[in-house]
Every structure is written in C-alpha cells, then in structure tokens.
Image (tube, rainbow, N blue to C red; front, side, top):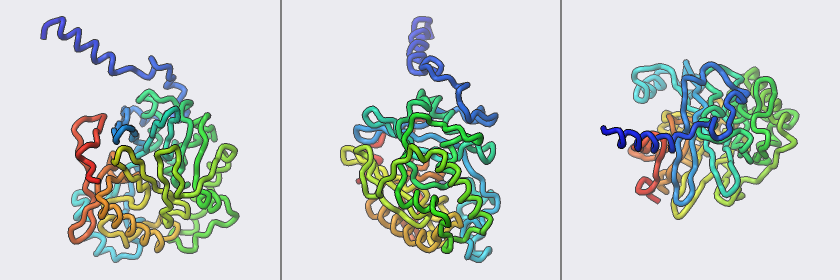
Length: 340
Ligand SMILES: [Zn+2]
C-alpha cells in the first residue's frame, strides 16, 4: 500500500473511531467499574429499523450451573436430560445473556431496563461501560422503561452502595408491577420459588424501587410511550411484566423481554421456570406470545437468548428459535430480514 493510501485509510479510520474520552465522557466516572469489564470491550450493536435505530448492549450473562429445577421444576429429570442434550450436547450449564435495548427518539435517550449492576458477581454489570464505549454518557439517559422489577433488569439502576447510576433519568414502570412489589405482602402463592428465594427477591426489589421512587412515573400497559414504543401486558413472569413493539415504516421488532429464558422453553413452553411469579399464568402467556410471533412472522428480541437476542419463532413439530444472521460486527440493517 502506498503512503498516500495508507494515510487516507488512517484518516477515515480515525474519523469513525471517536473515543469516549474525546466526547467528554470520563470513564473513571463509572460507579460500577469492576475488574471483569476489561473482558468485554463492546460498543454494542446498532440496528436500523425503518427510519429509526435502536441499540443492543450487553450487561453480561448469568450461568445456571444446574438447569433443573430452575427450569422445568415439575418434569422428570430423565425427560429433561433427553431434551437438554438436543440444545446443549456438550455442556450441562445454561447461560443466559443479558441483552439491553436503548432507543434514541427525537431528543430522548431511552434505556429499556438496566441489567444486573454490580450486586451479584463478576459476570454482569457491564452495561454502563458498554454504553459509554458507544459514546453515550450515563448523564444523557433521559428515560428508563422498566419492563419488570427483577434484579437482572433493575439492579443496574443503583450501585451496591446505593448511588443512582443514571442521575437525570425518569423511570417508567407499569402500575400493576410497581403496586405488586411495593405492597406489604407481594403474593407469591402461585410461584415455585422457595420462601427464602422469595424474600431475597422482594427485599432487593423494594430496596431499588424505594431508592428511585421520587422519579418513577407509572403507565398502563397498552399505552404507547415516546411515540414509538407500543406496550403490552404479558403477565405471569411478574404481574406487570411488559413487552413492547417498536415500529417504523411497516417494519417492527417485538421485545418479548422474559417470556422465555432459553431456546429450551420455546420448544417446551409448558416446562416453565421458577422465576415466574405465577407459574401457570406464565405458561399460558408464553404459549400465546409464541403463537402470535410465529403466525405474524414477527421479528423478536429477547432479554436472555444468546447475544444479541434477535430472531424469529418458527415451528415444525414444536416451536423453535431461528436467530437472525448478520454480516457486520456492529450494525444490522433490517431490510429483507423482516418478513412482515
Ligand atoms: Zn430477566
């Protein structure tokens, strides 16, 4: 390569890779800095949908070392092992990604959930670092839509020491979700969690919601938020578990959040997961959403399916996950990918 071409290439590379420091973002300001962050230098993924874009960032992952009885608590272990071998023939653990969506609409920067934060271990809490790598400061986040108040969705709102991570954000949460967790005795009578697990969950969620409650605005699922986010109640996982659809120019993506946590539950929706507050209602909702997504050939995003959690629900004898393929590391252009 001659020098002039090399120089030209260098200049164009520099113009693309603007570092966060040049954009006035002080990475040392990250209140959730942890050693493991250096393992995942990511700038997230930009997805172009019609004339809007959204972004997907990773907060890390959760490993479920002994998948049963977290998954399929009422299924015989032999049936479970036969099925899990189809999905994970070489390993026994199930890893759940934590995929987080961010949308820029007009002057708003909207984060949808905030990941686990730095409360529970080294494999999560990477979200803020990854957002900052993409040139978005925590101070610039204007709104956070909380899909439901489980720790892997709200833990990242405050640090372990109780500092609010996104100081200028308003928090939007379904009224039924907020009321459930903030009641004196949230009803877990239809859950399969142990009493100890329930109490841990309730205490953590109350701690986070109490810390941010001055800036909480509740909404009713069914409302459209920020002109492009059509919300929908998908109760069962939690009473106010909210899924939503973003549409532009006839194209759409439906974020089904925690309707299923692994491909295993797409093929076996009735097997369930103990995190569901109402186990049976969650099964009915899961089946309904799967059928709707399959029938409508709906592009889906999932909080916990393998990165970046984008794909379709397809069906042979059972439903199965059909992940989308993409051809550039940092960007997806949804054109012919979307069938509806
Ligand atoms: Zn979750």
